[in-house]
Length: 223
Image (cartoon, rainbow, N blue to C red; front, side, top):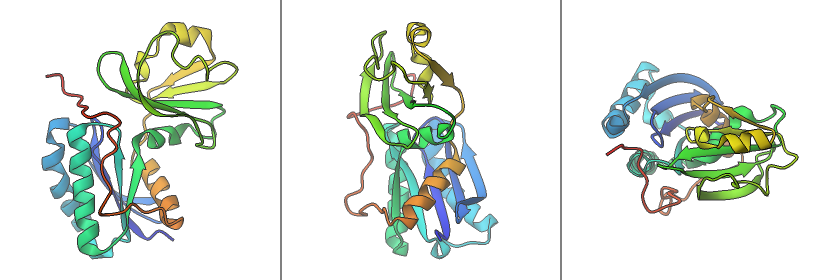
């Protein structure tokens, strides 16, 4: 049993905090203004716990989406998670943004699932997984063109997902058996992964855990 878990995600455009018990969501709060993620996070944690009549000492662990994603957002989320875990002496669970994006499309008949995070212009942070969440392509930063994924896509039914999936060229879509989905992961998927990792004892080192940037700097700001 994974007990009561707090989930934090400030990696992309939408931030949220959620509380689950044994994988089932009990409470949820979100923020849609990326530049306000930092000011949203701590009050949201306080308010969601208060609404459920829970305290931080009731938590069994905290999960955080730790990257890749927004440079500032990743730092904000992980710093909050580490601080609470350290103070309460509870485990920290770090979840890859790319693996989190894949979960809604597992067991849907796809041979290959390719999550994409928009990294400006034609660049994305990406990876590729099979239906068992095993990597076909390790996480990387990629500038997309018509030849992207040509060693992976043949004879595979493929799903592109994430906020960078729209960058996949029509040439690739026409040439291979591909779909692009606007369906995005949320707190339910994070809770599912966190429950599994808790039960398997897959905890991050509180001292050495850091954001998984993939590159030195990333922001979705238009400035």
